Length: 342
Image (cartoon, rainbow, N blue to C red; front, top):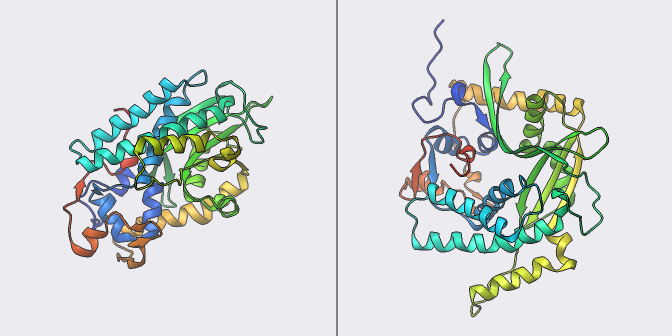
């Protein structure tokens, strides 16, 4: 019997060919119309945010730095940040003056934070930790910003692909080495109790643990959750930018502020917990997305998802006002999986 044509065919994304990513799943759960525009049609806002760009800058730079054999130097940190800038220029080949100023602001803010990070976690590169480290220690990196593409089989035998990019995967320094997922987050506000309680339910963390299990053939012991706080200091109206960055540097390097800016949690996971998550969370989510793709599940807008705690969603103007002037269409469905430095 010939399969029915999907109502969403003809865009840059195809369910069976491309599969899904954690960002796809999370947006789908939030709003189907945003999912259609962002993934099926490939629309992306030209506007960004300090939070998003700062996080991307830190991720790109750390992917470069964690591959070093020794504790990175200041010059190596600068070159790692330059990789982010090259990627950004590739994504925005004709930036406005304002966009250029904003991205330079982001890189200037990230520089002292990354320098302080390297000093605090020098033990990750064979140096010494300047504090009593209570979490597992990366001894051998298995993955650094490595892409994965893992098949998931439905009950009828059809396969969909799960895509992503590990921040890192490593073996610890125990006598019998164990495998761990390394997940970095940049946040301005950190609610430790809530983050720790919800980690076992976090779609991205659980999907990456599951994918690492399938990729390596060995169940990971758990996740080392690596949190970097984005500086909350504000530039004064009469303050020069160079003086503002100097003040940020002084703050992030204060010994008393290290536990404020840099936090790590170690969370172990059992085989049963991964299997339960696959059965009760992953499978139902993928089945729902499949039904939607096949036109067997209704498509609708979730208006409550248009404005979140950080303001309007990136596709607010196209959805509410039909205005696509500040958007462009991608040729690839998963923007976050484009290789760095390419």
